[in-house]
Image (cartoon, rainbow, N blue to C red):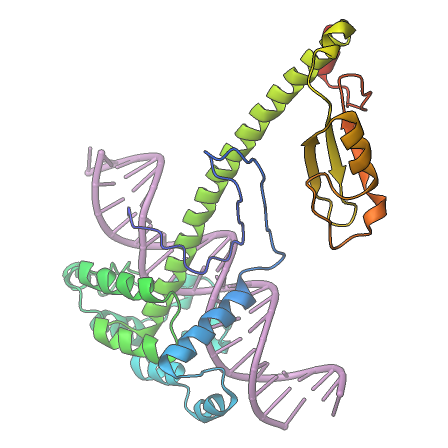
Amino acid sequence: MGEKDDGLGLGLSLSLGCKPNENDSSLHLNLMEKPSQSMQNHQHRTSWNEIFQFPDRNPDARSCLRGIDVNRAAEFEEENGVSSPNSTVSSLSGKRSEREPIGDENEAERTSCSHGSDDEDGNGGDLSRKKLRLTKEQSLLLEDTFKEHNTLNPRQKQALAKQLNLRPRQVEVWFQNRRARTKLKQTEVDCELLKRCCEKLTEDNRRLQKEVQELRALKLSPQLYMQMSPPTTLTMCPSCERVAVSSLSSSAAAAASSTAPANGQTCQSGPPNVQRPIPISPWATLPIQRRPLDASAPK
DNA sequence: ACCTTTATGCTTCTTACCTCA
DNA sequence: GCTGAGGTAAGAAGCATAAAG
């Protein structure tokens, strides 16, 4: 449809700390266990309640509505039937073609929907479900409403349905489907982003492997090493696991290794005496995993 | 206070219909 | 006219939550 994705309240909690053009390849995936439903519902309900002062989760309001459920009452009034998916009637019914009653409800549906195409096809006697395409105006208004808020409380659903000359159930279904489409779109976007991040990491990895090979090659000519700049020291704080990088002269490195992190700042969260300096030098025999790339490296 | 039941609204998956190339 | 793909309205199942008993 080419509609702009507003990214509102998506169930998929996936945040990427990696942008394609950034040098930093850090990737933060926050895949929450069951992110969408409860959290989202509450968020939206809260905002709705704040905006419209219609706390449908408010005990008082709810108890008031218990007798007269706005939504169900309206649906009953309009459809002379039950539309809730979990209602006894709907759950008792079987396949759609068998389920849909002849007559009243379909009749009511057709007459309640004002778009011409439905009436024009002249298939009133057909038992199978007819696709009720929403008009451009209806879609536009629904879309605008969705941009403002992607869920509706019963009262708003009712009002919007009335405004659009649709049944509340239709408005509800439209919003459900719209949310699903938004989420799907966002998932696709996130997936694409992940793919790009993965490609970048692969490229980085390849580059680093190459560097390792070059450094190993230096082993063969130690005199070259003497001309190199002083070794880099990494100091890691064991509690926060931050690594500080510094290029030190041997005396400075010795000093740093016994005191604060190399960046000169004392780490507040961890014991100061247990920091481990990690020297990096071409001679260091780091346990590097043997990979096909390494295996083929010159010795 | 805790448990069970019920009602409600949501997500997700699926189906059926429509449109268009 | 036929056909397959894509879009979408709607149904169904399952889950979470809140309220009532």
